[in-house]
Length: 416
Image (tube, rainbow, N blue to C red):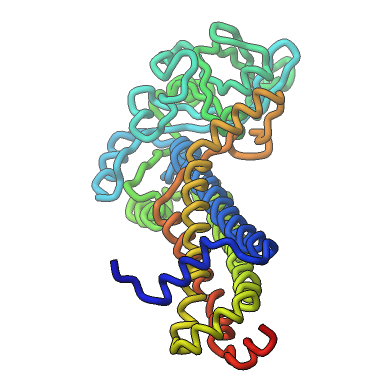
């Protein structure tokens, strides 16, 4: 089988035992360093992809893509919803009302945002139905004054399904006996766990008509409409256009970028910045090949001189050491890529097992928006990382190979 001279000798130099064991050790560490750099970069980018995915699927699946609201209660929300559905990008519409206050039970107090929903319409715009541990949206019967709590809020209040909690509204009632806070007893009808501390600890669901009665509105009146779009990144523009079309003085729009946009942008920016920083680690590992090849050139000066004497051209000598350095880069990159993909696919289970073993939770939902480490391998990231490592490895071979090509046979053989 025919092989070019430079490829044959370069491959042979790579696998041959060198007279200098130190050179062999440096070559091995260069390969391992490059593999570790690629592994870490793939792993970290996959974790950042996981955070991005969970942000979209869980948090942005729970909060509205956008809302159309009015300063005064909306009476015929179904007619308004029919107008909104005419917008092609609107996938689903559901009514909602929000009220903030406190939940109390046996001296325990928890702040809460009650989302009043229509149990039949809410699944069209929210994924909350996928996360119930007990109960469900169907338990929110009109007139029953039932409430669905996140597991963190339920734990803080010390309640379970069937227990009673008292809701303290931020408004007071004036009576002949004085001013009293507005109170209402709710029955816990379900508990959900989304995995996002903000939602599990501070969001509750109740029936739309029950909250309307609590706020002393007319039956069927709502605060606004919750909208779901086919492309959530178009939400700010489309929601504003809808509000203007419905009547700019009577309606206004809000979208997810106001409530969670900063968090999402932070995740995207962190992925970019961490990727650039980790690329520097890969670059350092790749350019260790320079020191390896410089030592190899010094070690092989006699061989280079003999090859030149036999008629090898400077270009062939240069290609020999470029092949050797490229082999180191390819092996290191492939090894790192394979280990990086393996680690990225299993890191969530590994971290969860380590948390159970040590009894420590690394991601606290009170601090982070989720309480576990997600990971998602994307082929474009793997290809980009491996391509960058290979390119840097190839560039690292140029100077030592050029220096080898300039070796003068007479100078190299003088002391042989």
